[in-house]
Length: 158
Image (cartoon, helix red, strand yellow):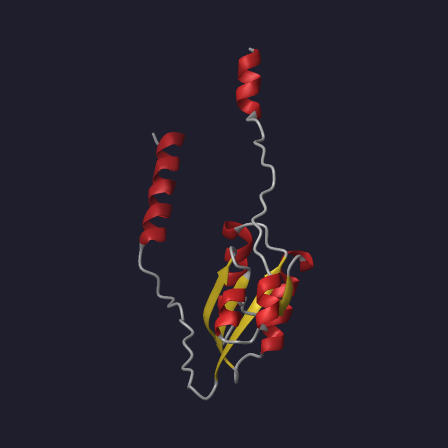
């Protein structure tokens, strides 16, 4: 007599074997050849990111999934996003709209401006010598504090 356990075991084995078998469906990989004439490089400053693992990675992944995007790199530390894409397949406007639509509009996209150090300007004689003596660099440190681990506080109370 067949028991309920044997029936469930048989169903389990059949489902495992059928899911592990080779599928006749083939996944199609979208590959786009980008000529140097259509390759566009864009750098943006992204405001509103609060972490590297969630925000930066999400933006990077979502933009990389767009058709025509060849390279997507978002750096949380600097707030810089670097994209390389096929201008014939996607526009900068579409990329910006996509970024600003992620997380209900949490992120704002601006043009990336490279930071130039005062020393570099002085070396290039772009700053007047009189301004050089007026400029001083001040290191500012903010007070820091640690948030106590609530779990250990609760365990200490027991």
